[in-house]
Length: 118
Image 1 (cartoon, helix red, strand yellow):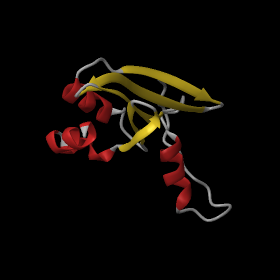
Image 2 (image 1 turned 45 degrees about the horizontal axis):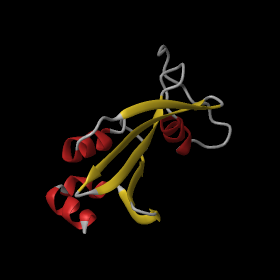
Image 3 (image 1 turned 180 degrees about the vertical axis):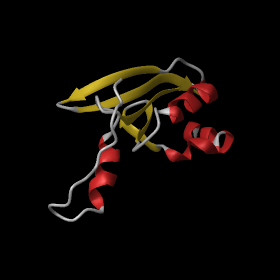
Image 4 (image 1 turned 60 degrees about the vertical axis):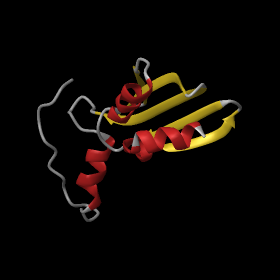
C-alpha cells in the first residue's frame, strides 16, 4: 500500500526498481545509472524526507559514486540507493570509454580527450 501511495503521489520515482519484502518490513529502491550523480535519490529525499549520503567506491581504476537514503514513508521503512560512474584521472567515466570504443574497429586508434583531472 505504501509503495502504491508513494508512486501515485510522486510518479517521478518510477525510474527506480522497487522491491517489497526482499528485507522483511523494508521497501527497497535502486538504480544503476550510466550518468548523473544519483539525483533520483535527492528526489526521493524531497518526497519522503531524510538526508542523502554520498560515497565513492573504487574498483581498480573504475570509480563509482553511490547515493543512499534511509527513511520512512507511510510508516514503512525505506532504503533507496543509486550508483553512477565517476570520472577517472582523465575526466572519463567507464560509460564514456565504452562509447568511444564501441564504434571502432579492432586496431583502430582512438583519440582520447586531453586534460581532465579531478
